[in-house]
Image (cartoon, rainbow, N blue to C red):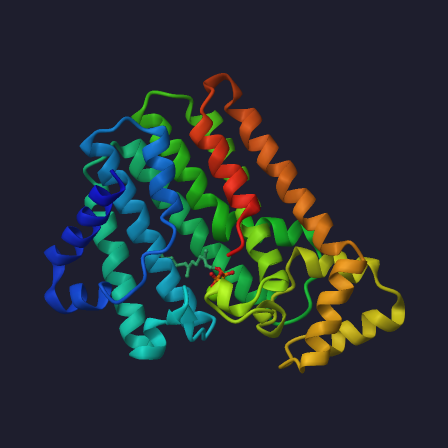
Length: 297
Ligand code: FPP
Ligand code: MG
């Protein structure tokens, strides 16, 4: 079924323009987490494939724009489109992908269309918050959660709840599952930025703090440090790190328990996700949670 989603995405882009198609074929496919989610929740019918393709096109568009905003030069282990071409090309391909996705979304019920459109509005507001919070050290945990809810979890929430609606299952329960999965996913992403190596991640490691992003492990680290080390950490904010400084951050992250604390929060969210759909016993959706928490990239 996932191959069907892949073909349909390509078909949708081919409907638009041949140049856009050749650019689209250059961007790496990624994990297709959202499509897998749809296919695990919704019935194996054409409508589900269509919904999955629409969501993945929107997600791909958001990453094209995100790499321009973050001035990232790699995505999933290869140079990003804004790096191989330019930001204008990446922005416009993103616009094509998401407006085509919206066009196809009009075939769905107003309820589903609104759910997805509302999620993308929040996604954009979340990215705007991410940009805003990257200008100065942001140590407020509640603000971090609000930002990652909008930036990452909201589209996964709409994906799961929309798929549940196609399956006549509880939209609310699956929405809670998707929301918690999304929050946990972003926290693990933020942890891996610190604990993983660049080769495994497919993007430079320890990039978040340099880009100005004070993620959950950094918030917990700051809380745990004494005044001297807090000053040292603040001095490294937005800075190109030397090997020693990178080593120091990683060591402090481990010995202070900051990384473990963030992983524990992600695990708790994972359990809450599963609790929400407990009456709908689904081993595939349980595996999505464990795979996501245990992943290395
Ligand atoms: C990745 O965050 C970014 C997102 C999950 C959302 C980006 C959203 C937009 C750019 C809004 C525009 C939306 C559309 C549909 C055009 P990250 O930078 O923390 O993760 P990364 O390390 O994978 O780059
Ligand atoms: Mg980014």
